[in-house]
Image (cartoon, rainbow, N blue to C red; front, top):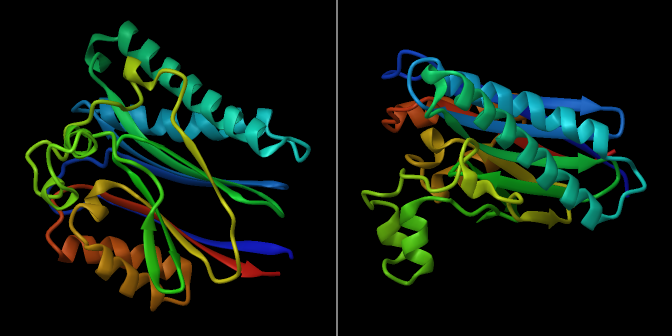
Length: 251
């Protein structure tokens, strides 16, 4: 069965920040679509630079590496290599410029080869969610200290949502902990599936139930992305807010 992706994107400064350190992009090549969201950190202009480098480098590397003939495992390896390349370039920039020494960025991306599955990966705490048949599922794992405590059975997932370390990251682009790259999920798709890529300016303030209700009620993905951004601000987000929304439809 042939599918098409309907995609919307939004990035808002918000009400409390002087500059927008988030970056979003959707690259639609003839046989490849890359949707990517990044949340920069490091203060001043450094976070903006890191997030922009991430959304520039990763699609560039994927465009060079991915061909229709590649197996799913080979695609996963190519995605990891692209993320590692972005990490190395961001770290190199930080090493050369004192003002960028501590810069870094999260990244979450969805990669679709026409006619195939969706590949999802993330570093940091920007997330990818899937919505199918009215149910939401988080497809990525946060690389925060709070999540590490959950995995160590020290705190519960519910406690992690309010924990003081929920926004403290131990892995992000610009850090040695990226290693050989993150896990890459392979997600079979069907007509009507929806996906959300977002920064914690959205996921940190809007509950899963509210995300589900809002996304399920929208027909247009661009209006959905813009509406989610406004919903986050209305819900008290004190951060930049960025997202990409994706709907799978039959051609």
